[in-house]
Length: 292
Image (cartoon, rainbow, N blue to C red; front, side, top):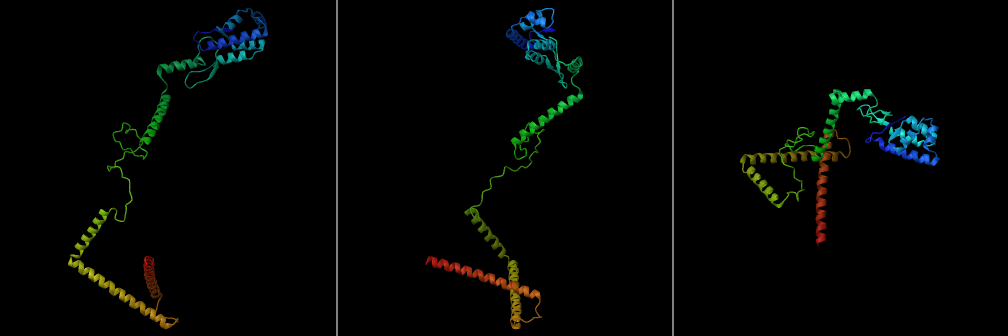
């Protein structure tokens, strides 16, 4: 059985390819259409002529019998591929075999009715919601990528941007200008002008402080008290040291652990000051020797 092919149908190319393959196979086997029709137990050989003309495409069953008769399985494969379609209804997509000659879009009449209903009333609310969510997600991803490419720091600095209402970046509310590049100072005072300003400001502050008689009196009292405290401490430490020396290593019940700790700290301080003087004197001698 066969059906005529519509002129604009996609299967026109498949029918032409089938016709060429059938003609080459019959010529290679040395058989005509009457012999083939008789082998297929067909009443007329005109259908064979229609297949060889490329205007009709046989059904899959007829193509399978013809392939067995001529020993060419490609005839059946070509027809199977040409007559296999995918349902065009969204959500279906099933593959099906269509034996007719006209165009086919759906795998069953029910799919055709559902698609007609969808075209008339639109997709269901659930489908529309899913499609809207997918579109919104794509839009959010696009806006996020654009904004982060524009502001890598993560803060939007353009309040009048057209994407401000949908931008995922927070708006920067800092009114200060962009920070300048931090350059290291050329010296302890920075520039020579800055050093002069610092020295002048320090001298002015000291002059204002010592111009106050009350401040001078308070400072004199603090200095005198400090010297008295140091003298008392030195006298006490000398007494402790002399007691230890007089004892000659024997037990000294009049001296407790706190006194020994204080004596050790004092001695350590004296040693450090002596070391500094030695290093300073040694450096001075080295410099004098080098210069000489």
